[in-house]
Structure formats: C-alpha cells, structure tokens
Amino acid sequence: MKGPLFYSKILLFGEYGIIKDSKGLSIPYNFYNGALKVADDPSSEAKNSNESLKKFALYLDELQQEPDSLVSFDIEKLTEDVENGMYFDSSIPQGYGVGSSGALVAAIYDKYANDKITVLENLTRDKLLKLKAIFGAMESFFHGKSSGLDPLNSYLSLPILINSKDNIEPAGIPSQAVNGKGAVFLLDSGTVGETAPMVQIFMENMKQEGFRNMLKDQFIKHTDACVDDFLKGDVKSLFKNIKQLSNTVLTNFKPMIPAQFHKLWKQGIDTNDYYLKLCGSGGGGYILGFTQDIEKARKALDGYKLEVVYNF
Image (tube, rainbow, N blue to C red; front, side):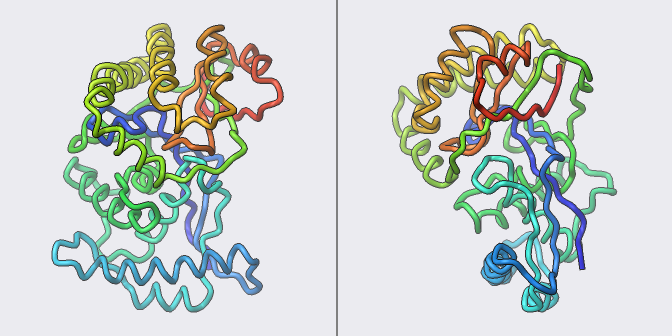
C-alpha cells in the first residue's frame, strides 16, 4: 500500500501576523513530500511514525465525537491500517517550518474523512474556510493551536492568499523567471525549531501594548505590502518592503531568530546583498532569504546551505 504524495509548504509572508489578521501568502514546495505507507520490514523511523499515528487516531476519534465537530472519519479503517503498521513516509524535515505535520494531516483527511471536500470540486470560500477549520482542529494534536493553513496548502497543492482570518483564496503567483538573478531561498539554520514555545513567547509579548502597536503599525503593514508586491510582480517595491520587514523582525522577534544568525541577519540589511525573515515560527529550522542577486548572496553566505525555491 502507498498513498498519494503530499507536499511541504512555505509561508512566504504572514508568520505570526496571520494570528492577528495580517495578509499571508503560502506556496507548496514540491522538493519535500510524504505519503502513507505500509512496509513489510519497517525501519525505526517507520515504527516511531506508526506509534504517533496510533495516538493521532485516538485523538481523531475524540475529535469527531465533539458536538460541534465538522468532520467524521472511517476510524475503523484507520485503526486497522495503523494496527497493520501504516506510517507516514516523509522527506519533509520536522521542526523546519515547512509543514511536516501539515502534509500528514492532509494525507489522513484525504484517505479517511467521510464526505470529504475534494480538490476537484468548485472550492467556494465557505468550503475553503471549512477545510481550514477541520485541518486546524486536526493539526492541533501536533502543536497546540493551529491555523490549519499548512495542511490546507498541502492538500490543495496551490498557492493560498490569506486576506484575513475569514477570507482566503487560491492565488495565482507570477510565474518564475527561469534565469532570474533574484531569488527566494531557504537557509538551513542547522537546528530544529519547536513551534509551541515560540508561539508562547509571541502570546506573552502580545500582552504588552508597545508590542501590539509595533505588530499593527510595522510588522503587519510591511507584511501586507510584501504580499501585494509579490502578487503584482513589483520586485522593486517588494525588496524595499522586505528590507523593512527584516529589520522589524530583527528588532522585535529576537528570541525567534537563532542567536548565531543575529549578526548574519544584520549584515544582510546593512549590505543589501540579501534580506532574511522567519520561515514559520522560527527558533531554528529554515530561515527564508530574499535577494536580487543570488550569486552575491551565495558569496556573502559562504559556508551555509542555500536552497533556491523561487526565481525573480
């Protein structure tokens, strides 16, 4: 048995801001993927994944019994498959901000949800919001509170524009310039980030008026502008806004940036060779980079692992 592939995702813009109704833009990243499988001779990773799926199946059974539940599953089939050794075979790195649990949630919904909303039907805003709510409830098993956006992206395999909490739509993004010098890239921090503690720090900071004002007047303002610029293909304005966003994050989100990257972050802003921003909740995993000249960025970041995900 082998299920269909579900891809990782990259939230280009909107981390933390979307909790407070900023815009966001999320794109599928096909370099990493995962699928449900059963193996005759499971590895230790497969066994660990299978153990996790056992707990997840119990959680989903409880979830579907809640009075306001939006979803029901074929729990008997899921439990039987898990008992037979089913696991999630994934190349998506965990704790890297590219949606490893999101792809798993999408795969489970796709295979076991009753009356599921399919990718082929006319996806009205109501259906998208319902899917997002279902996925948020499912993914909460993995890290406390989830927006449901990662599994939604993985399930639909489409770029998603978040206009606000109650307004999301599939987005057309400008096609890539094959030989473009400009690029969005992933920078490997070499450490794993945990989502829950980072969100905890953010929620604590939100109790301070100064932080809330900064979020509204700077962070969300620049994030929204970046989303608009990216969708319009206005590269000049985009880089102006990304520089401001990068600076705002360095000043106000220091705990989310691994300490060894503070200097590198500032170097990018000072030289304009590249600009860095959080990829997901931060604390480790990948850091997102934007540059107008990828060769310049590679030289400046010599010794670090860069993966290009989009060319301008």
